[in-house]
Image 1 (spheres, one colour):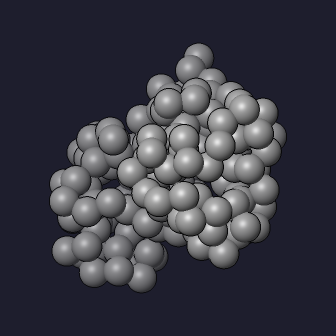
Image 2: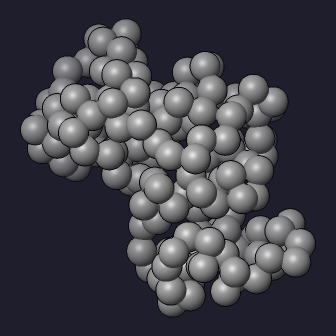
Length: 157
């Protein structure tokens, strides 16, 4: 994933003017060390933190994940909280539209079929790496899957 490079870019190029790493960590409710691990690529950032960062930076999740060069979509909404049920419904609908089964997705993203089932039922929030891998493979917008817009396809320009 390109997220650590994209996060570094925001901090180093002052795209987040007057926002310090300490204030970002406090906003996310994490330590500065944990934030540093996300930025350096030493840990995957959970979707709840990724969503908050995107809201703070006013950028799309697709952009921070490195799926799109567009920083934001004009039709994106900033969600305070992610809805696992809605995410699951959208994931299931896309899977059915693509005519692939849960086992195919599970094999692609490196989890078991029961994990995909739990994501689709909204029992568990999808992992960032699973979301990224699925979206990259099938050219699907992570912002769409998370309910931040209504266009399921990645926009690159």
